[in-house]
Amino acid sequence: MPTPFRPPLPLLDNDVLRTFVAIAETGNFSNAAEVVLRTPSAVSMQIKKLEEQLKTTLFLRDARSVSLTQHGEMLLSYARRMIALSNEAVSRFVMPDLAGIVRLGAPDDIAERLLPRILKDFAETFPSIMVDVTVDMSSALRKRIEEQRLDLALFNCNPRSFPNFGEVIHTEKLVWAGAKCGNAHLRDPLPISVWEEGCVWRQDAISQLEKQKRPYRVAYASAHSMAQRAAVLSDLAIAPFPRSYVTDEMVVLGPQENLPELFSFDVRLLTTPQLSVPGKAVADSIRDFYGQMTRAAA
Image (cartoon, rainbow, N blue to C red; front, side, top):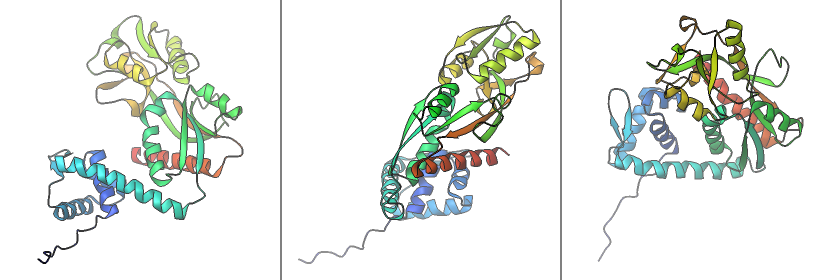
């Protein structure tokens, strides 16, 4: 009995899968379009063709965001694996010698908020380079670089204290953050949540309060930014945060709440003198990420 004819299965396009993953991760088409460097209409067209190709609906859409259907969640797993395998295969031919281990240091706030995104993008481009991350205070990271226990490190820096130390890759304003509709900033003495001794944010916050002669007490001290944020959201205290770290559940406090202005700090990159080629690739990836973040905020 002859076998019935079946047309060949269509091949999935990696570029379309990258767009699909970007939408799943950002939650809307506009943000995904920025990630994949396409127009929103082109992104919509790609997803429409993909849904037609697979004969299923991948996203549930509303006015503000999109969410994955059950079939979309299934495809997301396949898409990530296919993209990772494609990157690995291409790197074996295009960058066969770019492999090794890079030791990277970062303070807790960067390690929590930004480093996962930086390393995720880096791993997709350079799958043969392994990055070992050390999380510590900025002062300790600088010492590790000097002792060559790290290849490169990011650290927060007061520009007045280290005018010519490391490469400035980002500058940001430090602000007072409190819980939305909270009243911690009305208490006397003022309860503050700060990092441990040696943190440049702590130093500036306390220095400015003392200059203003504003009574305060350290109500919550931790070296972990997640704990700092929890203290703020619980309205136990207010805290000095980078402006970009203030979420929708928080408010920026300032002179109108009788709080002093805080400084602008640098995020700097410090490397060992003889940085390896894989280390330079990590450094370039970090510079590119912060460059994109600065342009998006402009």
